[in-house]
Length: 159
Image 1 (tube, rainbow, N blue to C red):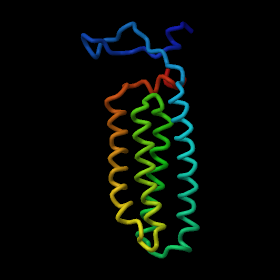
Image 2: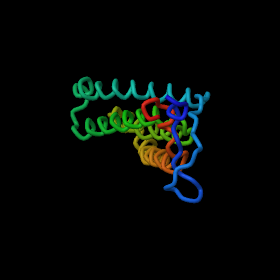
Image 3: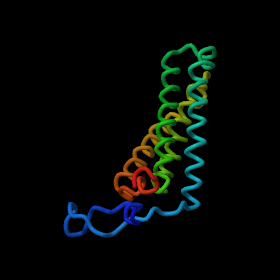
Image 4: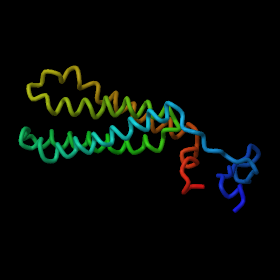
């Protein structure tokens, strides 16, 4: 196999996005921020599974309101989904930071509001949830307009 077969060939040029060029894209070595975001994504994924299991089994003995159980499930699903995306998007620190902030604020505030049986913190935590959602959206936009296609360059199966 030639060395060209071991690299991802960039298929765009400045003159025409459809004509191939001979330039190659080398996968970048992991940076300190990408390694940190990888760990955060993995830890948030693990806690999402744990919190989802708690919501499905342990929370039902403490909370009888089905809407609150559904909210907890939504928070766990969003946390798990965005944790997985972070593992693929570690090459984009802006997206990873937005996903981290978004998961913490969106899912975290929903978890706290669900457990707040006396409704002491609703006025404080209520506005945090949509702000977290905006951070999640910003993370997706950072992926859309950030470094296109470089996530796949780091995986051997995509070469």
